Structure formats: C-alpha cells, structure tokens
Image (cartoon, rainbow, N blue to C red; front, side, top):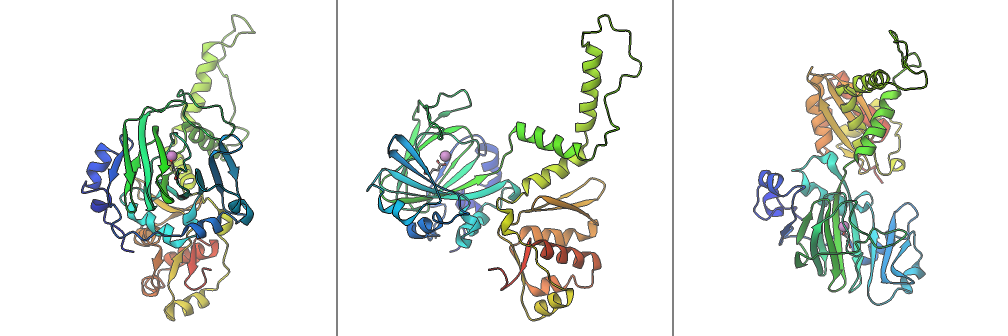
Length: 391
Ligand code: SIN
Ligand code: CO
C-alpha cells in the first residue's frame, strides 16, 4: 500500500496550516485520506491478537450484563462464540507492536514529532457496536479501515464534565451533538483532546486509532523530580543559616516557605536535566520485554553487513535525539540516553528516522570508531536488529 503524502492525508491542507488551525484545536474530517488503503488486518487476525497473553484487549457490549459492559482480555475462542450478533466492540491496544502493516500506517504522520506518536489501537465493531460517547485526553486520528462507522462530534469536555456511574469506562452523561458523518474505508477523522465523540458501527467495521503521547502535568512533575532526585546526595538538605529568632516556635513562617521555594525553583530550572528526563520518558517503550539484548561480535556484524544484510529498527524501540545549545548531542533510545559527539548527528538522524538501514549505509560508518560503537551498542541493547534476525 502506498502511504498518502501529508497533503492528501490532510485533505489538501498543508501540514503547517493543519498545525496552526486544527492540531489540538478542532476536529478535521478528511474523505479518502488514505486513497489506497488496504485493511492492514482482518477481523479474525484482530480477534487472534486478543487471545494473546501479552496483548491488551477489551470488549465493550452496549447492553451486556449491565449497560456498557466491559470485558477484559486475553480472551478465549469461546468468548467470541457467545457474543451477540450486534452492539459490541473489540478494542486491541498497540497493534503496531505486533502487526508491521499497522506500524506502517504511523509513517504517514511523520509531519508530527515521532516521539509524540504513541500507538495504533484497532477496533472491530459488530453492527451497532460502540464504546459510548466519551472524550480522550490525547489527540487521535481515527482511520476507518473496513466497513462504515457513524461518528458524532460533540462539546468540549474536561474533568468537570459529568460521567455515567461506571466502574471502568468514562462515558459522558450528556452528549451535545454538533456534527455527524459516516466514515467509509480510507476516511480519517482527527479529534483533538477533550472533544466529545461517539462512534457507532453502521455495519461490521474496523477503525485504526493513531494516538499520541502527552504526559499529564502531574506525571511531568512526579517523574522529572524523581529523575532529578536520583542525582542528589543526602548532604543537599534544607538549611536555615541566618535564622531569625522565631516570634512563635510553633509557627512555620514565610521565610521558611521561601527557603523551600528557592530549593525547588533552583533544582527544577536545570533545563538540560529536564530535556534528558523528557527524552527518556517519551522514548520509554510500551513493551520493554520485546527489546531483547543481542550478543553479536563486531566481526560477525561486519560479515553480515558485507553479505548484504541491513539493520532493522526494532518495532518496539523508540528513538529521539536532542542537540544542546553547546553542540552536545544526546540520543534517547527506549528510555535511556547517551551523550555523543556532535559529529555523529548524521548517523543519529539516520537511525532515528528510518526503520531500515541498508548494509552500505551502515558500512560507511565502519571507519568511524564512535559511530561504529554506537551501532554496536544499539544492536546490543536490542533497539536495532540484524535483518533476517528480527523474528
Ligand atoms: C473505537 O474505535 O471504537 C473507539 C475509538 C475512540 O473513540 O477513540
Ligand atoms: Co475516543
């Protein structure tokens, strides 16, 4: 399948205009965004994935034992046999990790930062199937890959929006419909965070949801300060040199609070540490167990490359990089980082932006000791795989 160029995917709107007018702001419907779409997996293949232990899957029944009944996978074959003819949806998370054809879809979104992309959830719905009116905290591109689904778009929501009492699902109590479309295979609907949406299968259908990573402020503070604190010693401690005689020994005065504030502000102002933490956090893999270390000698690697085998990016690996103002280069690879000489920028860009590196491209780095070490380290960690060895 040929992937659409951004202009096609965005319905003739340039990526710049999309970012200015739609991204994080308002929904966009694009008819035939993927004009050459081939459904990347069949309903049976999706159901097969939902049987697997390591795959996260759910079934939502509109009217099950209770309204909007949620069943959690992994499922057994019999679970599917007993489902009704209609009004249920199977949802499988991070299908891109298991089906290369689904991972391929993500490449069409390369006009957005790759570290913002999270996963592709794929749903299969029997006629009438729906997960109810809801909003997500993430941007999502909903790609209709099979059959037809009616999408209704509603109001702006936030954590004050009333929800139905439900132990597991966040279904809106009120849905104020503003627009409605029936999506056909190849159509895409972009929905920014916080916009209510309600999809109902017109007939048996499948939807691929390309979702984005966005840590909450709580997560940012919690994880960044946790990261910072790992480099602090016990000697760095609250101190009150110059303490004034307290008016009341039981009172915590303003000076005390200001001393604390200074400690926190000084620490969190470390921009380099913030960037390092962020790169590590945004490249944390969803399934670390799918990134297995590889023990390979430099000679065998060279032999394999000289035989024409290339290197494949592990589909579970996440890579990004940052150039510091002082010309330092930091590579982030699946939740870890390493500082590199700036001369390795072309190699880092190659590795971060390609899922396949041919043998000649890699062998060109054979004579660069630092570059070659980086390639070996990425293979040793399992972020890169030798072609033919990636099963
Ligand atoms: C679905 O595919 O049924 C739900 C996707 C979504 O609303 O985010
Ligand atoms: Co949603």
